[in-house]
Length: 356
Image (tube, rainbow, N blue to C red; front, side, top):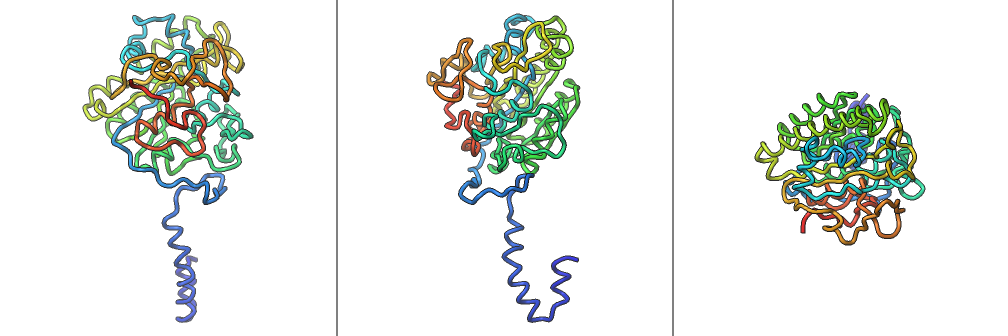
């Protein structure tokens, strides 16, 4: 029985009184914003007002799961022409950092889209697992509402999409169901997924589109990092990245407005099948490349003197910071003319720049 059915059974005066009491409730429901899937409401003082309108720019984020930067230098320009094109024309470093606490896929990607560290007790997102867990949300992991680049873009009036080769990424669609406007999962099919992604960014007005490709990680686990099969997988990924770049450059409205940000969640130890040791240089070093409309060429550490190139070090969360994969969220919001993701840590001041 609906509220209207119940009101219809009341006498006229009683129905009018009930309707008057009910109207404010109905009005508040009709204007409700997205609630976290964990159903934990955020105190009013912590809620984020609607962001200002997006400036017409677009961000394409690409994560090459398990890409050890050593593979980029080993293969060189002749075998990786498209990644080297991004390096030659864009702002880049091959010495960025993964998250401090863990060097595995889902926790690091959650940091990429929230701008938070991992550890929940330190105001991180709390996603510490790396498997597909139906019913879980980022909010549940953190114990409170967690915002994301998807929500920030949505509230700014933009459209978003998530394309991934791993089922566990459905976590993001569950967590921000109103803000991730399209989710496409093609399990271990990087070629088909990239084709669908390219069609989507041409056919729709996506302000933020995230493409996750897992071939290097899959091959590393099966055959070992930096083995010939792994390096061949990186070459195939380079071709897929080149297809995305070609789509952007050959579509005038995308060429004028799109910034591509490419990074990775972790590397991998050469000759092994894993990347779980967060203290290993081969695991925590990742690339971070910015390319596209309005991006100047240069080393990101030269363009950002307040950041510190860590060499082979593993900086913690305090003190001078390196470029991190978690900087992606607030770099994207800055490109789009929006404020930072609520509650974020990495690049919260949106200081990371891609031009002189």
